[in-house]
Structures are given as structure tokens and as C-alpha cells.
Amino acid sequence: ANAANAPNAANAANVSADMLSPPNKDVELQSLEEELKALDAEGGRGTGGWPLAHHEIFVRILRSFRMKVTPQCYRRLEKQFPEVNQADLAEHLRFCHEQEARQARRRLILSRWRQRRVLLKAQGSELDSDDPEKEKRRKNSKRTSRREKGWK
Image (cartoon, rainbow, N blue to C red; front, side, top):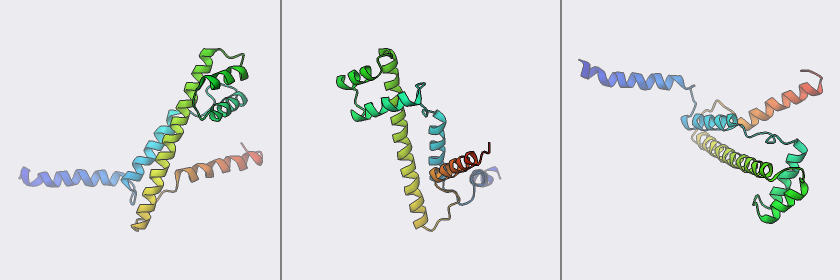
């Protein structure tokens, strides 16, 4: 009798696992959304401890050298930031490269997510989630409009 019930037990496990995910929610879409959330939770946003204006100048210089730390690039950064020691410049270069790598990874995940949605829509699947970027922009626009109205 136990052998006959084994397939039913396996099916019950699959059914309960399926019940955990929302209806019409594609497993691959969920996985990509989780990857995106994990990447966002890693951090990497911000300025690496630098004042915003200095960080923006730093990144602009680095991008003018196509994110390549050549001797000329390093000299330009040293000239722009004479008060910053070499160790801090090197640390901020590392921070900027890590940030760029995270952004590239994020773009790749979003691209895969959008491709999967297009495929599922073409197959006629009903999807219950919007583009994570659109949702983020929607939330940010609410915050902005509240700030403009003087709300907190």
C-alpha cells in the first residue's frame, strides 16, 4: 500500500509547491525578479562615501576614458582631486567599477525579464506583474509629487 501511495505523495509535494507561487506567475519571471531584488539589496547605489558633486566629476572623468584606468586617466583624477590620497582614489575606482558591473548585471536581468514577458504574452499567458522598473518609477513619482505638495 505504501508503494502505491508514493506517487501520490510526490504529486502532493508538487501541488503544494505550485500553490506557493501566485496563479499565472511564471517561475522564470519570479526567478529574475528575485535576482533583481537581491542585486538591489546588495547596494552599490550612492556615491561611495564621496560628496555627490565630487563623485559625479570623478565618474565623468572615468567615463571620458571609457572606464579604463590608464596612466593618463589616473593623472587627470589626481589633478582634479589633489586633496585625495592615492589609496582613496584607488578605492573609489574600485567602487565605481563594481557599481558599473552591478548596473550591467541589472540591465541584463531586466532584458531577460522583458524578453520572457514578451514570449509569455505571445503564448497567451496572463501575467500578473508589471515591469519592475515601471513600478519603481511609479513609486518614485508618488514620492516626488508628495514632496512637491509639501507632504512627508
